[in-house]
Every structure is written in structure tokens, then in C-alpha cells.
Amino acid sequence: MIHVQGHGRGAVLPVRVHAGGSHHRVIGSHDGILRVSVTAAAEKGKANKAVVNLLSQVFCVSKSSVHLLAGATSPRKRFLFLNVDPDELQGRCIRLIESN
Image (tube, rainbow, N blue to C red; front, side, top):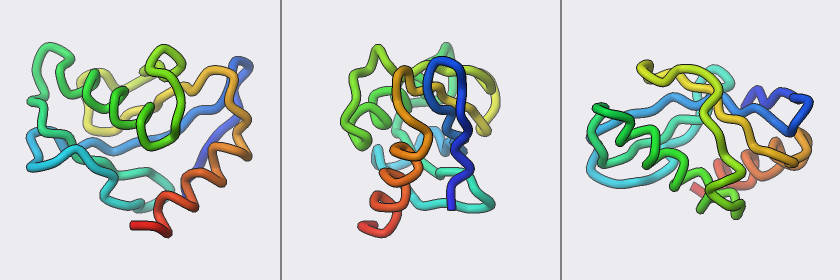
């Protein structure tokens, strides 16, 4: 299970990013963290932008509602989903991982 946390402005999702991968995709989960792969390189914020785009697509939210909270230069990141209920995001994570 992914460890989604509540936040005063929405929900926080922990993500582990593999930059420079062959596809933009959700790989799965490990130790409560969503694992994703993006083709963008980990330089000048390119991979972070690609992850925002990927998360907005797979969770059906606007790109403007997904914000990087922590981990700008690390593979381990925390993203804030504005105005999203933590339980709803948790349910979406479960459905997403089960469909992979």
C-alpha cells in the first residue's frame, strides 16, 4: 500500500523516480512508495516536470494541481495533490497498481 498522507491543502504522495527510462510509466510500488519511470534526464528539472505530467495523466488531475514538495534533486520525492482527499488518492493508487 502507498503511504499517502493528508496535508492542509490536499494529499501528499511519495514517489521514487527512475529518470532516463525507456517509457513514461508507473512501475509499481515498494515500501509504501509509488515507483515511476520517465524518459527525461535528471537535469535542470526535466525529470521532475515529466513526473508531474505523468502523475496528472494517471490520476486524472490537472498539471497545476500537482506540486513537488520535496526531493527536487533526489530520486525520492513527495508530490502534493491540491484539493485531493488522501483517501481518494489512496484508492486511485490501489486501482492503478492493481491494473498494472
